[in-house]
Length: 159
Image (cartoon, rainbow, N blue to C red):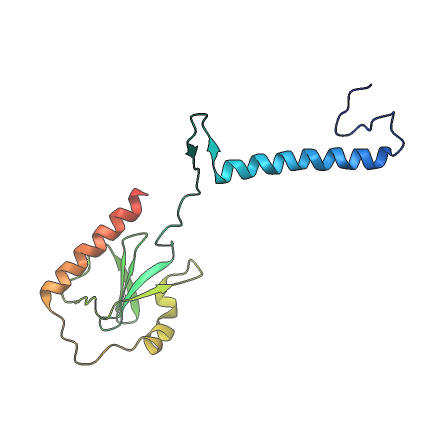
């Protein structure tokens, strides 16, 4: 009997097309089973199973921003920059000036689907996220929020 390869049919059988198809399907099944075993887990020979899982999705995406409606300030989690208005211009800085107060109660997470700066959509965000009235901003909370933002950025960079 001749050796059989995936692309050559066995010459002794009457239905060579069926045999070739079956052999190709079996080869594809072997590949699929091997890949499935690599994803779900495999045995290491000692009776225990080693599970290989995909990495978890990142918590913050590159275009996630915190928006503080009361102060009209954006914070980029992935870059660590603050964006704030200064007249008709928007300023991009790492450290926010002290006259801005950040309150985590009013903070909103904004996820953009584009790499454009968040202030391009400020008119939409201003109408969508109206600041709560009568919310007093405590300077201690502001300092805690700024430190928390810095830590979020550092944790994002460690990934």
